[in-house]
Length: 326
Image (cartoon, rainbow, N blue to C red; front, side, top):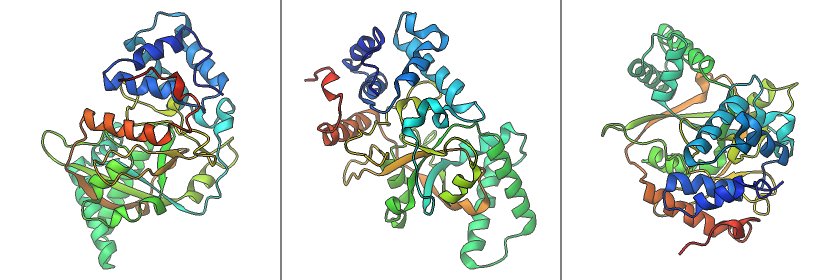
């Protein structure tokens, strides 16, 4: 496996983009150049879709190709391409006996439920979740009508989701963060979730999901795989590849984990992450609700990537292929 090095003229195009100054372009170009885990057949599949390999390349056509590929091959198939034979070298054989976490935005969950016809809006979902968590914390009964309404909403959330793989982190990696008063901001930073930010000056409500991997394993029994190392081609963006993602070198991650780019200005740590197949959420998965009250500016993402790259550069097999920077 290489990182598109043998795929000219696309690789030369990537190097030219990586030599630029716009973060939204240079970051994904660097990721394509550095990612050691994309199998050769998957590179060919990416380049072959829509005849992209033989077309003229520019930023817009490349971003469109990434979006089209991610939707067509990763997000929409009944079994995501992440877990089919074309990506077999990246399958992971975890023993599924431990918890993982995901940070979801409440507005994102509500949008997915709305697509499936739910009449529970974001504000009501927020109230219902708080009521449920309060009942759980006080060991009191949760109103059965509210419970049924929230459960139906969550079923709509899951049915409104596509089949893209889920980026998750081991609970043990972030347990200390969750004890902090500002856990939502800190976890957003630690997991490299730069797309989660305030909205029109108001905090962004986030929901912490936590569950045991045995659920995921059991949901995918009989399928080719259920867990995988993250690659640049597993990112399913809305408009452009994620500048907060950074591919993990094999030398530094023999067990197949990825490492998040911590966006914090001080005290940065690098959390493990990996991918698993789609599951249906349950109410028990909802552990807490918080508010993200800060934003991560592009300059901060660029600095965080630089720090992350410096930390890993001795292990990156293709670091020398990046264009020199002043």
